[in-house]
Image (cartoon, rainbow, N blue to C red; front, top):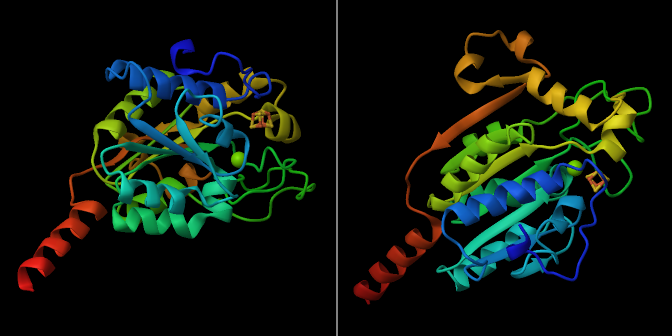
Length: 269
Ligand code: SF4
Ligand code: MG
């Protein structure tokens, strides 16, 4: 990983934080695709622990934006520099709480960027508040008796919104996560990769996990491959993490459609 990291900085993550695994999966994916450096990338992130994955630690151009606003900035970068790989790293709170509408519209437009959502099921950095992804019944700092709301399945929402590539894994599935990121980096159009990720500091200990290993075991025991999900009832799937590749399709991207329309308009004049 050292080749891709700024040498004079120390990573800010707590011991056992899954953000390190997500960073590692991404860098291994880039490495295996032949990127000897990150000069062909621009990274955007909002606010939250996972926003630190690219900024300022990766040896690359990155934009650290306001809370929930990484995607509009990524849109601007991609429209001006369609030749670069634009990758957004964000947490579940940042992308599916504060910035949810941007995420939906980016998928609907088939904006040619990759979004990696690090889902620790909590607002980690701001103190462990309940998030749209927090499991029903989980104790957080703002739901001390348990979460009384149902969690949002962001991966399913991305499928319904029109993304070109959608996959979900956990940090306990490092190899599969890396392969999904490789496919995502090669795909055209809107790419969404969700990584369920442990936050031992703000989620794990409050929910009652002894240590990060227990969270990772819970991920493995609780994951159901997408191919098997149809064999289960909705009730059986409640609280489970359905993992796998949800969508892999080819469709014109936002920049394709803008380019085509500009050409047609110029020819019509
Ligand atoms: Fe990671 Fe949670 Fe610590 Fe943030 S608070 S660095 S998400 S373990
Ligand atoms: Mg979070």
